[in-house]
Length: 192
Length: 170
Image (cartoon, rainbow over all chains, first blue to last red; front, side, top):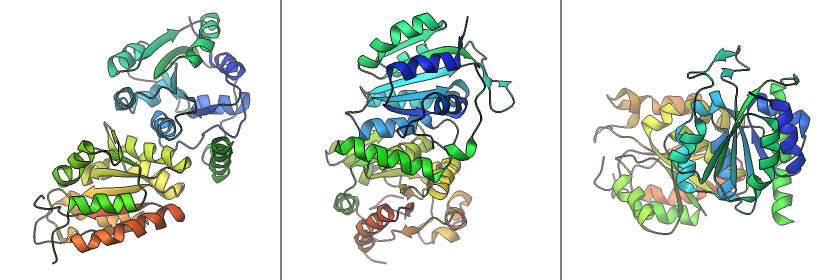
């Protein structure tokens, strides 16, 4: 069983309407359409690096919740990040992995291990405080509010498939405008 | 050549530059004189990373919140992180400040004249990437660190300090 990714993200948007989100690749394209917001940190640049950017934000802004929307292919490219995050132990860190078993924006070729990779076990072994796997929308929707309240770092492995197709706006996720928008919004948030 | 570069003077310069975070993987050139003292003392928040490109991105995230950081690594880690540095430092012009130990550099040679391929190619790569850098050859060069870091964060733009040897290491 899997969850349509856009449906899972709509649930997140409902419960987390205006916090900081670091989304990568197809999750970023979906998220930009589902929850357009200046506190979307879109410019992660190099593949695999989303959770590391998010760790920097989490350490810099301990009063802010940071949510990462990672991909399985991306996380596999930077697995050491789990240990780094586990070691730092940021309480304000929710790491969501959208696991579809493929490099969706790169020809839909399978990732090593396909959909069988157990990211939740890896996260716990790396020092995350909690880790959970969800493969149905109802369970995800029911659990999310509490997950957003509990201290992290927490990893959530969402077993997903593509939902509604959203445009892959690469210029937007690399744009100076997106970076400035985020920087300004974060500054306002920190002074407000 | 003046007095050997001293780790304690680099630390003082980083404090003067208002660096709060040291993101690091150990490098034999800087480990004893710089990284270990940083780990033992409480002057900086140390973030140990598993791989250097993580550090590039952590520094990027910190920079958006106005937090100053330095990424301490070996030249091999720099070479391994080129794509992340390319994006953050070149494409996005973020103030990624890196301190790179040149492990294997011969005592009587400049980096560009090293017989070690990994060391010899660092400066040409930095030039090709248009990343400003300073070679910290001796202790008097420590005095340039604070102002250079200020300039990088003000611009903003990346910056690299190359460390051929530190104290009696290298």
